[in-house]
Structures are given as structure tokens and as C-alpha cells.
Image: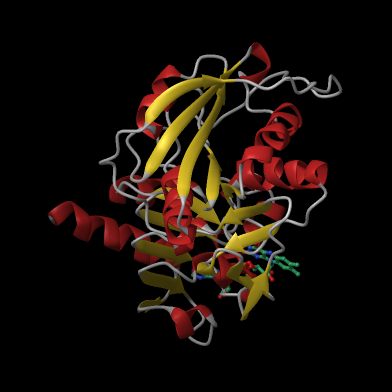
Length: 314
Ligand SMILES: Cc1cc2nc3c(=O)[nH]c(=O)nc-3n(C[C@H](O)[C@H](O)[C@H](O)COP(=O)(O)OP(=O)(O)OC[C@H]3O[C@@H](n4cnc5c(N)ncnc54)[C@H](O)[C@@H]3O)c2cc1C
């Protein structure tokens, strides 16, 4: 029987919704599912993890070194836990992409990245060439299959479970070469880009860091998260963690509004699974219009205020 361990992603207080998507992938693989919560105090997160559908046990691995979710600290502990499991899964987020390859290296296996679909317990579909091709990969069963789950391809599982919560631990030695110094996090109060239902992204066409205020204002009107193209990030208009695309975040919002973004293939890779795409661009031949459900041709500095006025009327 498959025994699957899903690594919980959290901030010490709340379980990240990406974990429920990784559990959906585990359900598709089939077997007994456990979730590992690495924390200094796991109680709050474990309570949420225990409600995820189909989860048998939540393992609380509490120790002081787990307070800040450092990949270097978690990976040796995950590798030790892996001996009891056929599969190790984590969401393909910044967290999962950081921690799981390290665990795979310690186990001496190649990681399967970005599972979009489960064919069988050892065979998976994943995107390649910026999402332009889907490859079917078969992973050897021994010693353990280590895989990240493409969150845009999976719905969160339901929360009607009643898993047992149990303390667990490992005797893994934690390397001392990496230590937590400081966390600088966005305190905007806007929705999280990776899990938001609505996202407004700005591109090079926005023109400057100061001009990005129009994107933030419009996003706030919609209750949306803010994203950006790589050109906007590289130009210093916004921080790097707002980048959407092949080398940024892969997202699947209900609504994606691309403002002053041309629609390069590397950007489109990040929004393939968005439900409705609205594009605002002054160039009628911009490639973004080929994928947009709704296209508005014109100057963004004129169109956004007009849209805001219309939203105010609702
Ligand atoms: C290996 C690799 C990885 C990459 N990864 C990513 C990635 O993860 N994400 C990503 O986004 N890109 C990525 N890129 C870069 C990508 O190829 C493009 O260069 C980038 O997406 C372009 O960003 P942009 O659309 O904002 O800029 P541009 O292509 O310069 O487009 C700007 C658009 O704004 C429009 N515009 C200008 N002024 C206005 C106005 N006033 N009103 C309305 N419209 C206006 C223009 O008509 C134009 O279409 C990657 C590239 C490589 C090689």
C-alpha cells in the first residue's frame, strides 16, 4: 500500500492553502496520507491540517529549530521520516521548491517536479518548455518518490476530515550553516498572490515604480492581489516576489487582469490556468490579446480610472 507524507506549508499560525492542493494530489495517488507539521509550536496549524480530507495522521515535529521553516533545517528531518513512506509531497511553491530538492538529494533520488496529473502511483504528468509540452514521467519506487505538486493544477481538498494528531520527532542532525536572521514580509493586507481569486498585474507599460500606484489602487478596488511581469520586476517597479510566470509564480486565479503586459510566452506560462483573463494594452497586436477573454485596447492610464468609476457605480 502507498504511504504518502505531505509536508505542510505554514507561517507558524496558519496552514497555507497550497497544502490542501498537495493533499488532493495525494488522494489521486491513493493510499494512507499523513501530514508533517514542522514548527516550534504546531498546535494551530495541526488543527487545520487534521481537517483535510483523507488525512490519517498529522505528525507534529516540534523543535526550536523548526520555528522559521528553514529548508536547510527541515530537509534532514524530512529525509529521516521518509523511510516509512512511499511518497513525499510538497506544494510547488517557493517553500516546496526550496525544501524538497534538498530532501531528495539526501535520499539520493531525483525529484519529480510540478505534478499536474497522476497517471498511477509511479507515473505523473508535468509541464516542460514553459508549459508548451506535457511530459509523462515514471519514477522508480525505491527508496521513495519525492515530488512537488503544481498548485495551479489542483483544487484544494475539502475540510471534512478528522485526522489523529500525534507528536513525532527524528534524531536528524540539523546543520548549523544556515540560521534565521530576519523576515521582511509584505504587510499590505492584500490577498496572497499565489492563492488569490483575483489578480491585477502590471508590466513594463506601467512605466515606473511611482506609476505602479495605479495598479495597487485598481487591485484594491477589486480586492485583488498584485502581480507583475519580469520586465516590471527587473526595472525595479515592484519587488521580485510579485513576479508571475515561468521564473516567478504560477497562479490560477478566477480573474487575471494584465495591464501593460505584452504576453510573452514566459509570462503566459504563469497564468495558463487563470479562469478569465482581461488584457489592457495600447498595442492591438500585443500577443496577450490572443489568450485574453476580454481585451481593452488603449492607454492604461485612461482605462483604469474609467473602470474604477464603473466599479464605484456597482
Ligand atoms: C528564461 C526566461 C524566463 C523568463 N521568465 C519570465 C517570467 O517568469 N515572467 C515574465 O513576465 N517574464 C519572463 N521572462 C521575460 C519575458 O520574455 C518578457 O520579456 C517579459 O514578460 C516582458 O514583460 P512586459 O510584457 O511587461 O514588457 P514588454 O514586452 O515590454 O511589454 C510592455 C507592454 O506594455 C504596453 N504598453 C506600454 N505603454 C502602455 C500604456 N500606456 N497603456 C497600455 N499598454 C501599454 C506595450 O504595448 C507592450 O505590449 C522570461 C524570459 C526568459 C528568457
